[in-house]
Image 1 (cartoon, rainbow, N blue to C red):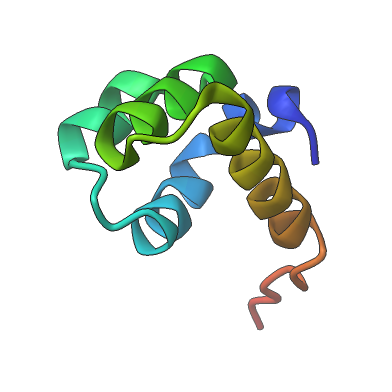
Image 2 (cartoon, rainbow, N blue to C red):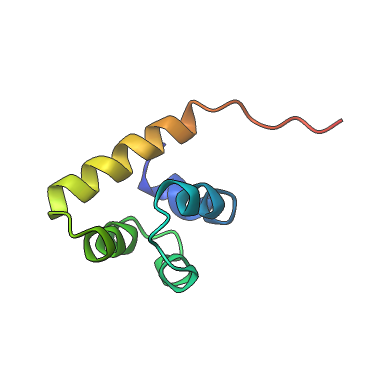
Length: 74
């Protein structure tokens, strides 16, 4: 999954992001609107991470999200 997919699937991924980074507020997630840079910036601000660490966390999280099986509805 890449940053383009992040913006396209933001509504589905927003809940998972809230679980992963509990310090992010609903306002942080709403303002990110699926933007990779805004999400990284919010994580930097809330967790006090350097940009490279925040990017690494988001990249790792996106990779884990792409390997999750899709939900199949009957």
